[in-house]
Image 1: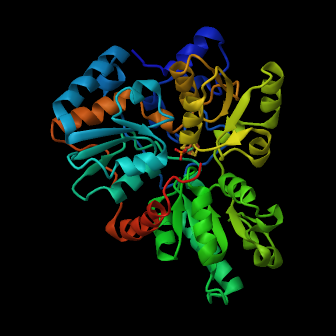
Image 2: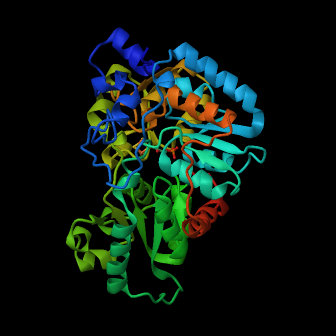
Image 3: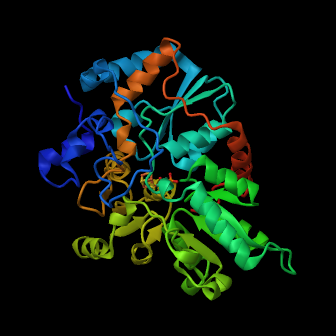
Length: 427
Ligand code: 13P
Ligand code: SF4
């Protein structure tokens, strides 16, 4: 029997046709085996998967054919056998059937920290996406194996900036600005990468005086960078960069975009000279679906509604919302509401539905009426979790994510700079 995400079950029971792709009802293994699998159902923005992206081979039939109940029982049994030899980390955007087994559930920042706090675990099973597993591997001990249950769980936004294009951009900026610090000892430009990026880009930041940020500490990290640099090169998410810098008072005219397919990123030399933040041309397909009309509609239908969106949403959406913050900010804002409140949320639907179930005293709904989960988080199905856990029980490590030492070392420098900068102090 093919398992189906509970989100999709709920929707198909109530209102057929309201998902962004009928393929969401498939098991991810059907997508793994397509000749050009792409990012999977829901990656509706025409995202192109890079040629070298990891591919997931065929999930063994016993897991593909198992019922939800059987998979659940097998995961519980394998976990019990492994005890604290294995720890399961689950991102907020994972499906319920996976989150149910997680030892830690959190945002990318919290899970990066959690990876460092499990000394007894031989294996860290990361139910999130590829860049998160890489980060866990960089921060974990070298004898701990980090496992990504489905190797095809990448992140289309992370893939929008690759090391070659960023290096080319950097060289062009060096030609333009030189490398000498100004009279206040600030270098011409500091690279800042969003956590949603490859280990190679984190390493690039480590090697070039830069730093990593997450959506929960982006403002604090930008402050750190402005103390050390005249400008910031921010990649890959233009929206997080723009929304955060704008809230800090940086004028939009001083935030040119860098499109790697255009000469000088599509800006002219004067714009780049005047820049405070150079924004890479990346975005998240899930958060790009939110728009101001959805917010206007929610305000008409629910006067007094509290609209909270993730800062990966476009600027107009963040401006029209009441608040913007990371997944953890959203969760805490709802948890802290003492009076029954209507919340319209602009982030991934699995997380929103879970919050709605957890806080029945509030009315909580996703701003996007079309159910469109993150297409790569979706690739971690309980079948893959059961497969890797039972592998560990047999002593076999399946789907290990290992960042080579020459990349891991400088990447750790950039991550540690972030962890040292008042971690999680902002949103
Ligand atoms: P958080 O950093 O809030 O966990 O978000 C990660 C992410 O991928 C959002 O799309
Ligand atoms: Fe990447 Fe967007 Fe999915 Fe987050 S929600 S993992 S940014 S594709």
